[in-house]
Length: 197
Image (cartoon, rainbow, N blue to C red):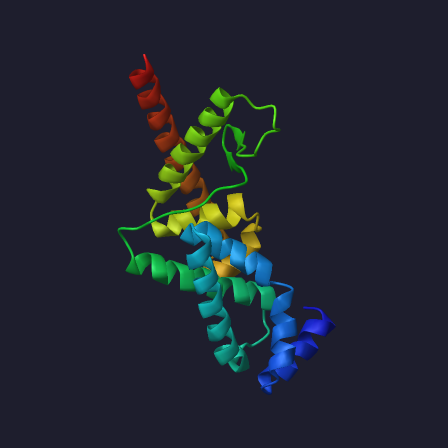
């Protein structure tokens, strides 16, 4: 942890709101992005990020500084979002803007140039929807590791700290989640080919 964060944490623990705001400012965007990927829409992501920041402020005095502040913050954001997802079991959504890796390579979900044909735009939109639906069908534990690793790009060590489980468990969940996702995508692709014949 850097000295700047350490000083801000110390001031935040003594109740200095300006120090707390300065402390979270550097990490707030990534926290929001995690919330957005888990919750699936901007409004819920803002609400969950706000809820997490309130929780962080209230519990900063209990932060033991054994991990980086950012890791602790992302863990709280992830937990707040997963708690909300569990409460809304029948309304699961996720947004995917980047790409993610599978055993067969990386699947990209990037926007193309303006020269994209209407057919290509439709196909890209359809592919994105297929991937989003497949991710939504994963259980929370698999969905969270896919979001943290393949969409947000956290390391195994960071995910281990964020989710409070061993690196071995993280690797195992990621591997299982990717395989489940690959199977779901393969099935959807075969079904869409069958219907388009």
